[in-house]
Image (cartoon, rainbow, N blue to C red):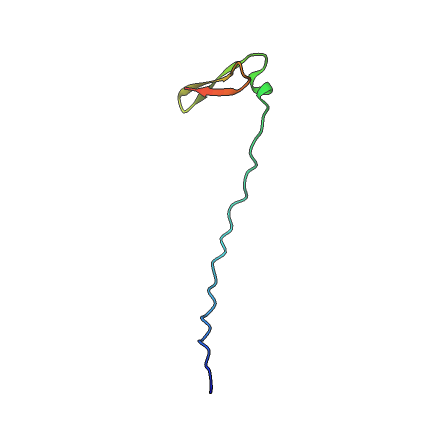
Length: 63
């Protein structure tokens, strides 16, 4: 008795897409941003945001 195997489907080659090189994320310390204060104002797209250090030493950003 002869058994025939199903034909192997042709190999599918995915296109290799190279992503642009990632720009490393800039890191600054909160101390360098805040200086001696506990609050700074940040202007973004015409709006002013306030970044504050809370009593629990957390950061909060409000519009």
